[in-house]
Amino acid sequence: MEQGVSQGLLDSVWVLLSAFLVFFMHSGFALVESGFCRKKNAVMVLLKNVAVVGIGSIVYYLVGYGVMFGAGNPFMGTSGFMPNGSEPDVGTLPVFVFLFFQLVFAATACTIVSGAVAERARLGTFFLFCVVAVAAIYPIVGHWIWGGGWLAGMGFKDFAGSTAVHAVGGGMALAGALAVGPRLGKYDENGQSRPMPAHNFPLAALGVLVLWLGWFGFNGGSTVSAASPATIGRIVLVTNLAASAGFLVALAWVRLRTKMMDFSMALNGALAGLVGITAGCDVIGPGWSLVVGAIAAVLCVEAVFLLDKRKVDDPVGAVAVHGVCGLFGTLAVGLFGDEIGLFTGGGAAQLGTQAIGAFAGFGFAFVAGAAVWFGMKALPGGIRVSKEHELDGLDVSECGVPAYGDDAPLGMGHVVPREPVDVPVAAE
Image 1: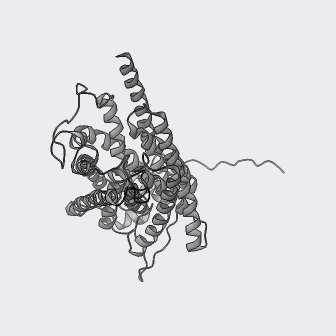
Image 2 (image 1 turned 90 degrees about the horizontal axis):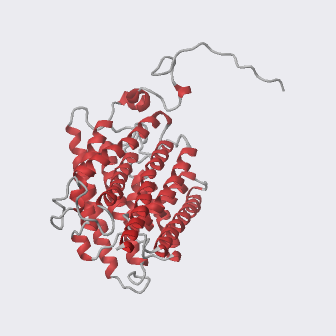
Image 3 (image 1 turned 90 degrees about the vertical axis):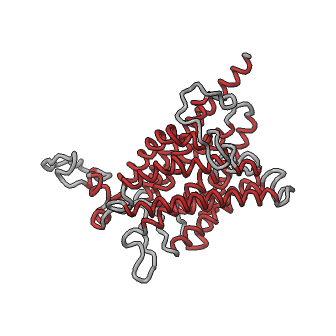
């Protein structure tokens, strides 16, 4: 009995620590998205990223958890809403520990969408979308995979969420980007893309490193147990290797494509590697994880170019990183997974199962997301800010304050007009 209690305590501490790391990933998303967007929209991007945590936490507790893990049918759960703590443990974990770990994953899926519709989507309709996504879209696919649904019954494998989180988020992001349309001035009269460069690379770089760190909890914590340090160690190692390969290969690949060392592409390459290894981090070995990261990086770079050519304006590359690489990462289990992969002696059976699950999850998220986004166009004001507000920047026009105080006109918001002060300069 004492040993059982001790193991339950260790498991709970490990899962909570991992959940804290995943929660901290929201700061990484906020930094990446605000850094990659233009300066005049940084406050709005930050506001959305923080708000997603609040909305996702409440809605997932009220509705999403029951839809995802409640008893019901192979499609969705219909019980277990608003747990009160008296429910049976989930394995060795108290229900609230397990709930919190799953809650921070749910909010992540909506954060992915935030970047794809940045700089032109209305705040209210984005919030409404988040409610629907966390209450229904994300947890329904989660039920299929992790809640005992029909994909779980087929033997589909997605250890930490290449499909359940990332492909779902990418599918919803693609729907949002199509519905809201490109930013004003992004494409000229001939359909050629105009560059709208990131305004703050230090923020973006720091954000990627924060996400990289948080991913160790994202993947490692998905063991939901501390019983096997060797398993956790391997998961963390392959996660790091895939990200490292993704960064370097993306940098090299875009150099070949453009003759430039595109740092933004390299940063997204690291994220691509992380997304790519997420489904199979428990069954893909260190050597193969380098291959996964490398392939994910190339796919990410090419997807960015392709989407831009198709006039799908995604300011942060969310669809390429999470959607495309989430699909690939899920297939990678059937390609490189120990003893089950096509290249590791397992034949093609698991690859077929992975393909069904990956495209079912992405497809459902895209169709459901499109229904919500295009449906919200009928609301008063639609889903997009006015032309004037978009041109002025959403920070000033919607939030009433710029991201950087030196840009604020005197008397605006909390900035108090003052007389200029002469600052003495030391003689050389």
